[in-house]
Length: 255
Image (cartoon, rainbow, N blue to C red; front, side):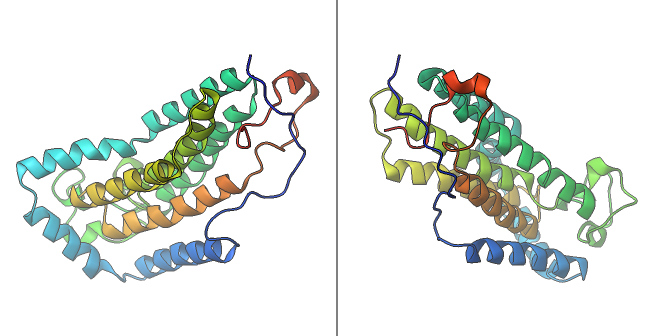
């Protein structure tokens, strides 16, 4: 059995970069401002220009490469990977705490991304060439309340937001998991895991015409905001019920 230090009841928020709440406020203001602008029929020209360019520069080879790479942002597999890593680390450290991270990640993504999509009710760029076959100009606005929900869930991009949150969760779990096997995960690799897949997903989901550019930008803003909230939580110090005392060991500060 692995020897792990006792949990310290330190409920101070964990540091994030950039430090402070000003960046979180900036992300929130950016998301609200972008939504207000789109609700006022602004930025449609940019969205249309990017979508038209992508439509005109999408040979078969590039399409399939982008489609394969876009699987990096599939929410269900990422959730299962995050949950699996949490369970594995929990068993390795004999601690329930690693499981809390993917559970909370699932909850906050479910109750933010989905409701925002339903509320804003925006069609995807492809809605003019397949069901529900809207006129091109009608695919851009928000609040298509007359459309079935399945046709109006483009804003914000769930692929992008989920990728940011779940690769952040995976990176936060992988480092202590590697240490539990006597290995060290290089900081640079952790950074790559957190940054590269979400950028690939943002690029491919826009290039494939599955989302407007502003959908992807909104997903980026929302994902970064949620990611920073998750990384601020003092996971090793959260109080747990007494019955879990035998499985109450730290993981983010595991040496």
